[in-house]
Image (tube, rainbow over all chains, first blue to last red; front, side, top):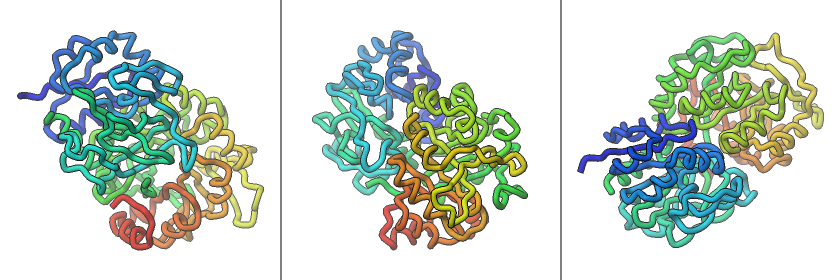
Length: 197
Length: 258
């Protein structure tokens, strides 16, 4: 199947890096905020830089929240985009898309807040295709102050003060709390795994 | 476990990378994209591009080079210099930067930090702080404004530790502490300043100014609880290769991304 990748572009954040990261692995990803284009894509990435309340507002204003809820093809939320998949975020006390059960909470203040830098993963379901060729020795770039609970949807956890969900999946809905597009070779492998789903 | 980060800082003036000693006498060291690509391949954890002319000349950062860098890099980068408003930050972030760093404009209008954090989230907001301190000035560290051009540099009237606490409270996500007297001198980082800053905040803290040898990096990570070390001239001159530096640090038991 030919990949028709779409990056949900709502809210003026950083999409160029994600587009380029896709291009480097041979995937031509298009940017759009048109709900009809989302329905037509084979793979959808929901990025996000910014604060949760603002980002949800931007999705709702364009009817993208409904389009994302109706989607049945593989979806990957990245960083804030992953947090928006959940029922609720404590950042701005805002309801999310509710595609994953659970809540996004503020990370503990210690040892540092926010969590910024390169960290490793503790796989919980290492045989999931999204984690193919990715293990405990791979480093990923995180930059976030809030995170989802390490629960049944967790494919791999990371730890910063407390364990949190770093890679999640339930059905067609996936998320990474880190930025694969900023995580050098390991990030490239994860994106390639997503487009192979 | 979170790795300690090594961050080459590329000072940008008129679209090329330059380096001066104590912010003076700049000379061209190379093309932005070429250097960025080289550092990423060499294992840099992150890059900082500091537009040293935008801030003192009150110009906006030219986003064309930010876009070029974003297309090339698969590691994060931060843009500093010339960001005076939410609109300035938005342009730079939309062009592909992961973080913006504010310094003098935040001293002039501290609410800029609140505005940036509310719009983009704290994780995007770095506050750079320049301090001109003698080793024996304990407790009397003043923040310097407009240090990008020495003839415009001035005492901001702010006490370092009070300012650190204030920007933390206002929503900063990281602090880069630059010791002006150490910058370019290559005699080691300013440990006393970093220790005092560390005690005043739980934010990620980046040491800047003074790296001249691999031991300086090991020392600052072993003695100061800093999250990252930033350097420019030792990397640009090729005297310290990041890959070799990381192997040295790892051998000393410091957690780094290989």
